[in-house]
Length: 363
Image 1 (tube, rainbow, N blue to C red):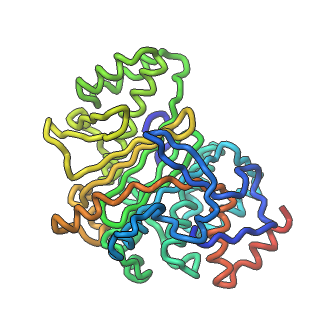
Image 2 (cartoon, rainbow, N blue to C red):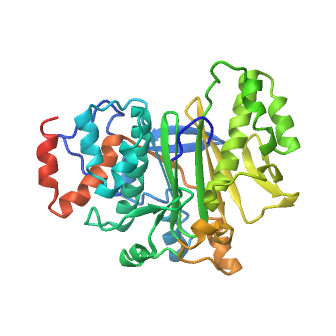
Image 3 (tube, rainbow, N blue to C red):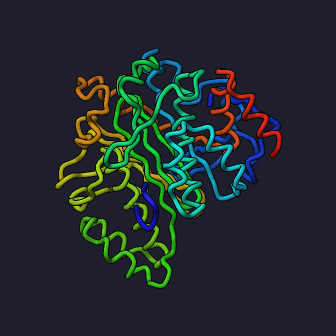
């Protein structure tokens, strides 16, 4: 990542919840037109399948079930400005052992990103498994920082996907999560930040070694310095998504991975000139100054620090192709309040919600 800190089917709306200014309490889906993400209201989201909109009626029940494991959620945190006690209420919805991973950051903006990132992970899993226990499972991270669900929890929760895994990203105004039922998944958001105190050329110069000659030429030949910066960030987010899918902290040799595209659609990649046909990539514009890249690839490519967290690594060609060619579903945009509501439902089901709601009444 560049210049940043690394690091629902049932929606119960509580009129008492006020977590500071944010988006209106309406679920939205982010529909892709070419590679641009446009947002439209989707009130039917909670009534039906959250993970697989626009499913083909002729898909088999097994494939439909697999599609339910493909989720894309995103939160715009730019308008969420919580007071300290409001932030604490949101934090209390996470397992206690997760709190320090949020509060260890000094800057408020970094704490917000860390909090929403972890809330997204727990909310997605609660929605997936319909858990009635808020702390039934714990999300861990590898030595390289990739989150995962412990295999013991995987079995205990009765997850039927052959290899469910997920990845998160945050930069600028957005925090997002992506999940897959079989393939590795990596996601990376970039904000097209303009460098402070240096030119675009000076800023990108130190990253030249991570790009192929063709990629670098495409970046430098953009018509304006702003376009140069955007081209740079787009290529970079694809490379980051690829690395994050594998769970690797290493980015050496990325110049050997070369991305090709048609107006940033139909994206493909080669490694040392050989087509990476076991991988799929997408790049989607997110608002006016952000984009998000998604990588989907084979479990066998997982980093040594991550591969032991996977339920299954070896698949037949047919099994793997089923996962590889699942639709890349639209992003769903959630507000912070909606994340709270998803997690709060788990508290309510376990009769642990009363004390929380009493606190919320004072907001």
